[in-house]
Length: 119
Image 1 (cartoon, helix red, strand yellow):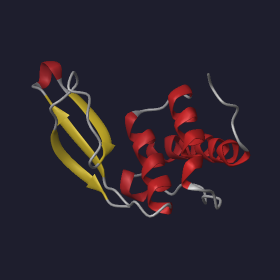
Image 2 (cartoon, rainbow, N blue to C red):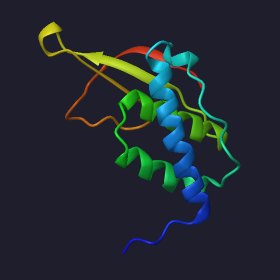
Image 3 (spheres, helix red, strand yellow):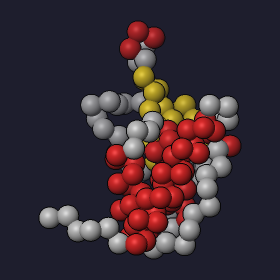
Image 4 (cartoon, one colour):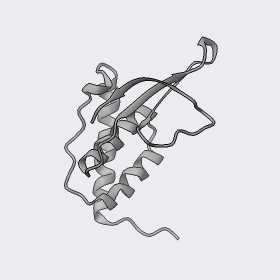
């Protein structure tokens, strides 16, 4: 059974929704390393539940998701690089972004690392 969201998780979800929209808008004209997300309110690490709920439900690219999670994690003392990788020849080319040390779904990997975005 799901428990109802607590206030910090709701606040984290609101931040995440704004952050995804901001990342999307900036990535049209800005390099991933130069994306600036909204200021994160002071919230406990447990409020990540709200961030993940938004990232599961709101349409977003893997790069947008990775940048939002990177900012959240860095604010809570767990800085990680965003890794951008590519795979395949030109006919089956694909790209993916994820946080360093996170598992990449083996059905879509392996990827050759192209770029890292530091927190």
